[in-house]
Image (cartoon, rainbow over all chains, first blue to last red):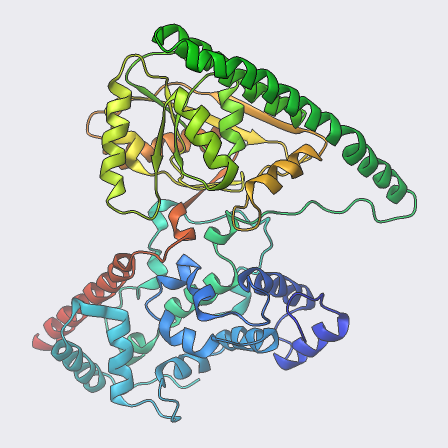
Length: 143
Length: 378
């Protein structure tokens, strides 16, 4: 793709579309490109963590730090691929699996709960919560 | 959760949550009789919100300068456009510079004697200086071929009142000042603007502040109160947004102007974008470049509405008062409201907003647990 400030050609758009498995239409990719250039203020070709955090709605989200690890420093093609992942439940697994070992352990669930609940429940309460809900319901939806 | 639901809209999508929807209920799980592991693990509302924010958010939209659509893209329109450029840069611009230079000469020739020779006669000196400041502002407006339509009763000089207006650029101040000599509260700027601020604007009475100094707020609040009490002072003009916004939206008003215990007179300003985009994107251009851009465009056309004075209603907090006045100004100028603080341009949001979300989620989880344990006990 080259420098983010250059214009998108038809080839570029099709390449990006292929990369995200045709999830987005060409018009949507053009809109995303405008957005990418808007966020990438210094036209480096990628968006830094700081520039993501300058969007207050994103900075307020309890899961922002986890998402930031996944999206930091991506070029436009990978940025679109990242966004396309939100249409499947697979992204939930990726967010939970912060140590990227392909498994979601009890510890991982506890950590995500800590991000979502913050200091409003103690560690002990969170553990009890996890244990009791694991016991309560064996049903885990399989997509 | 569908990616199609993410708002991939262009700048035309102006529908955004009200302040009441600031913490949208989608970010907390709905009430279920059974708390299943899937509910606990389903972070999709929070993820959808985050993805939505990455793709488009109402805050960044406020500060986007939308370039006009190019209309000169074919063989016969292009020469026409070139003629336009020649006229604008070759004729209009020199005339503007001439008008401005004449204005400054006249102004300085009158101001310097008045300022130094009439030191004894304060009242007369102040009155003359006010007229001269109004004069130089008229010259500025003329130099941009400004066409300003004022609606509503002109501001009166009464004690215990402040004027508030929406903010698009520093020229808002000049446009309002040519009609009435306001005192203004401003951020100190560097360069020639700072020089003008410290010499000429001092004569109409200005209050300086520094955005970055936290302690500064109390000092400024005190100065504001003192100014408003003084009977001889010029009426005070405040831009409660605290920063320049692109004249399509208004950001949240700071409550400082609304807790002074006096009448607030709203002023709405709307620029006509056909002629020039008057938004001063201070991150992208200096004020001098901005002025040059205005002088080389066809005209600066705007409407100014002086609206009905408002007072704090019984039982209303200053923040509610500020929001009410913001509603009035936004409705009059045909803008849209966004629930963000303008200063987020320079800093991160307060972590207490994230904590509030966490608190809501924690409370709902606790509630489910209690209901669940009650069910088990039965």
